[in-house]
Image (cartoon, rainbow, N blue to C red; front, side, top):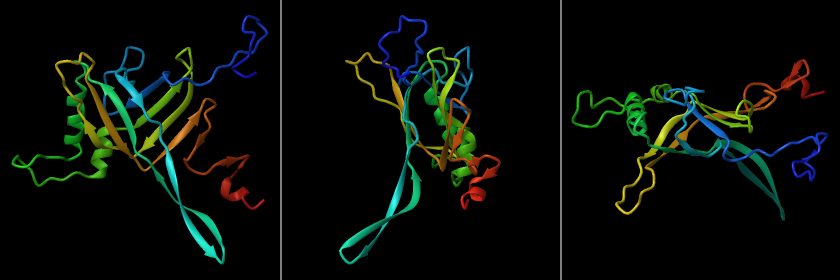
Length: 205
């Protein structure tokens, strides 16, 4: 039954609903201090871009024709906007994550130290973006970012004539992501299962 069914008053109507943009949870395992129901969920997350990718194309010209072939897959950056509450201090926590990744300002002890991908990914921890249903108990879609690290932080702007909440924007780079639907099926992670064989085993059938 489509979600635009006209008679929702009938008990026999199979009520379904589309995914809604405001029903989502963001989790950084490297940051704690979520709500009472989920200590890993960042209740101060305001917006989150879902992962996306771009497939490069290689062209081959023959006479008056052009043919295209898929090339490398590049996963695009993910930007997440966070409100900065007094507790937890998100600005401070993000700064600690960058420091744990290996950044040391010049003129301080160990200022020859440099960042590494391993330390940067471990400091941030696993990142996931989950869309939930209207009950808040069922995951409709979960994106997990692999080897994510912080590439950009904007701590927000201040203005005497503005009484809005202070917001931070975090940009993440990652190697790839997997998506898991409400039934637990995943994509972009390991061989795809088809019956009892893997994709490589069944591709030639």
